[in-house]
Image (tube, rainbow over all chains, first blue to last red; front, side, top):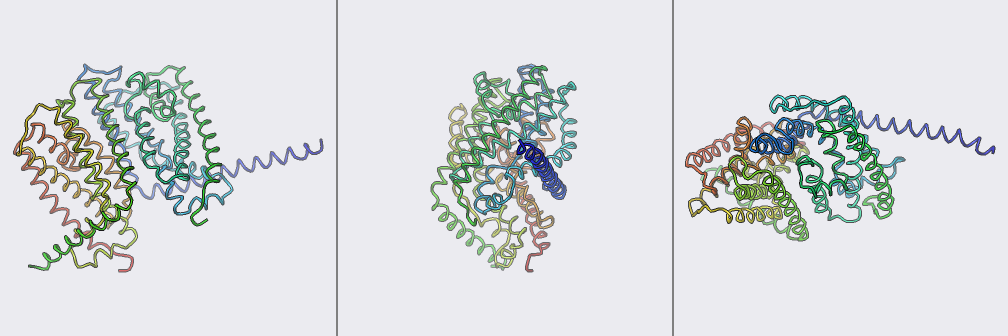
Length: 285
Length: 269
């Protein structure tokens, strides 16, 4: 009895302290990467221009086809395609997380050993610093989006609920992709011949996420397959949430589905990480 | 022979040596060939799926039929392989050297610095893409009714070479920018991103973009023009413009390189 009375408040204090130190960690990481990001503006803009080439290609090709087919394919007009692929550019930026290809260097240079010595799970460091970079990305994205809109005339008319869902869903997408790419990257701890696995993953993602083409325009069996995989939650869903056509019910189920994938991702990362550190032998540990 | 000629000849000999050493080095890692092959096949597989999706909804894209777009895709992959074999690794190395200050080692050698810096590294397994691209190219051609002979092949080879040189020029100009701003590590991402646009004939794009993708980022010259020469769209004017533009671009690049190297201040210099 006395025991519980004494322990409970102490536990709460410890937990509050933990929450506060996590917040501090995230704030510091985010601030650092914001400062770094704004420092290398040329580099960042090169990166972003290289990135927008991809949706512009899709947009031009699919608009050309839509025009050739009498104005639309599956309800998508050149205007909705424009809206889809311009929103795409922001979602794609939100999707950029620590690359699985970076794990090889982490292991080879012994960076991972340093991470292991820290009190917090290393994924927090990635989540925090990439989240900070997103702020830079969003600020730098605005003029690009303005130019693209002037050139391609998107038809975009979202409701308040759509805007709100989108604002949440892009961060949900960020978390899901962070978790899954972390899992993918961790494979490097067991084998170094990973690049072919990564490429296959990215090819599947390209085709099944809505990155290439709105999933509703894909053959039916692809859509069924996509519904069992996390890809659409990270790409197609946030875009469609803003661009439509989407019902209120679909907005809610989309968000719930994102939460499910986040939970699966967090669980997967934890299980894999525990096994990975057992298998890990440091280079200069 | 003048000193410049000597420097040039010496440079070519050294580049040849670099190539041999590079090939021998990479031949030690044969498993990398299998991995590269898988990657090339994944990439081309994805491209074929995209083509299938397009022709699910239409039967021609801006006047280009399916086999013709296969030809374009073949050239796209082939040129991508050449870039990955020689252009990309060397440009990356120049940038790394400038950032670390070790570019001194290039400048102090008694050979032409542009030649040496452009032909130091070779990734032989990236030629897998070139081979896969050739296979797709031939596959596309075999589905076309068009007949072609020696002149088409000569046009194809000369425009393809000129286009690849143009891409090298652009990449080197961007890389040379590192002499002033030091950090240019996103150039590769920039280029890889823009390169995707070459998957389709540049004629598909709106006029302003088509001009950019031809004269600024020479994908039109490197991919569309060679594809046109195999699909019965070639004109003599286009051939002349391609070769002429290459000569001009090469001269400008060389001039810019000289200015850049004069501006360089190394770590120890």
